[in-house]
Length: 61
Image 1 (spheres, rainbow, N blue to C red):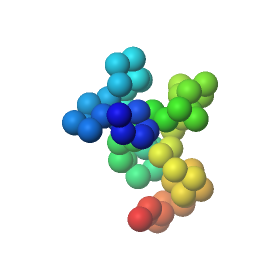
Image 2: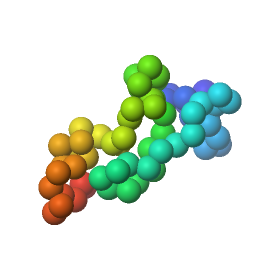
Image 3: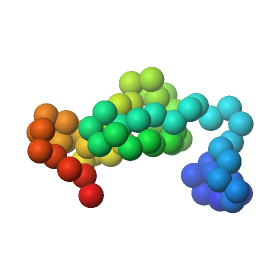
């Protein structure tokens, strides 16, 4: 099995929460083990998006 809970065919592990959409950049992002306890509160895909949330001109790479 590939790292990050993903399988080689692109399928997610059974029981993994659904993907979310980042509130800053609008990209989908997947559940990560480090977010296990806080998944309900996770709103941003990265630290860059979290930092740029109040800047209307922010564009992540």
